[in-house]
Amino acid sequence: MKLLEYQAHVLFEEYGLPSSSGDVASSVAELASISAGISTFPVVVKAQVQTGGRGKAGGVQLAANAEELKSKGETILGLTIKDLKVEKVFITPAVEIAKEMYLSIIMDRKTKCPVLIFSAEGGIDINDIADRHPEKIVKLEIMPDQGIQSYHAKYIADYSGIPELAGQIEDVLKKLYTLFSEKNCMLAEINPLVVKKDGNLACLDGKIDVDDSSLFKHEQFRVWRDEGETNPLILEAREFRFTYIPVEDAGNIAVISNGSGMLMSSIDLISAAGHSVCSVLDLGGGATAERIKEAVRIMLKNPKVKLLFINIFGGITRCDEVARGVLEATQDGHTPEQFVLRLEGTNKAEGIEIASGIDIPVAFADDLVDGVAKIDERMKA
Ligand code: ADP
Ligand code: MG
Image (cartoon, rainbow, N blue to C red; front, side):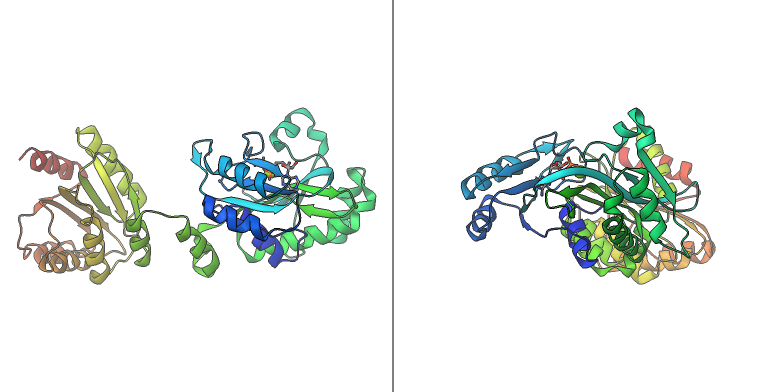
């Protein structure tokens, strides 16, 4: 999960990194009330979208007074940057910059450990620097059992010709590494990390990518994730630990399955047969009848659904649990117009027996290909 810049600043502050907090506005009215409360200008107004290059796209602007803050904020709120509509702006004090540098820690799959990347030249795309001046980038592997040591900072500062900053760099490295480890990051980047005119460092932009598998540990991230989500069915599905994915607006087939591979192959084959999927739901592993019932209910909330295809390859997920959940859902009145059910794997026979008690017509399929043939038949019926 990628965080927005203002969320990265919240973490920077939590870990004592030199970063300024600010205000977030998502409407012109909010901009007005924020600007009335600001006494020190200039400030910077920054588009909150998950992409770099906001500066170049006009998404980062200096405002000298309250009027400018409102007008520039409104302009930025109307922008679309790299296909992402700007829904929020971040307002933060303008910093007098003497030098822009780059710092990140990534989880490196090749070396299988965190790698620290530093360049005394930052602010612009690090890939540009890597292409033109690879010698200006320092990369250091961090041994997880040792963490950041003074020599890391001393090496970086000496190599980059800024030995006077070694102390401050050490402080930033240690705090960023603690954040990276404790928050289960895949990436924690500060670009630019600036030297201010007064000689102190400041983090002016943050990009943080958190390991999705760790979200269960971090309430704060789950709240941010849900705040950024506007589709109520995605949110409702999350309450039951399901992944709900809208597919095609014009589609009318909903698919429930256990695993993303199964879902993708279902979408592919249904599309190849000339039909269109509107939504899919991934049950994950080991869903109980109670949760299956909720999954069916959630999928049928979309009025466009004409046919429901449940495609289960039961391993940890048991076919009898699935069938019981589907049976209960239909008894509660959650019935699709057309229904195709494929049950394979653990407790298949029990599952089919339970499902045969369902009081609406069900087309039973032997495998995915047969399932798609039955879908084709039913959609033409
Ligand atoms: P992006 O990386 O998406 O372009 P940044 O937040 O890095 O966005 O901003 C782009 C540039 O704007 C920075 O390199 C810096 O020069 C300037 N900038 C960003 N935040 C501030 C700030 N608080 N004060 C002064 N200048 C800033
Ligand atoms: Mg940046």
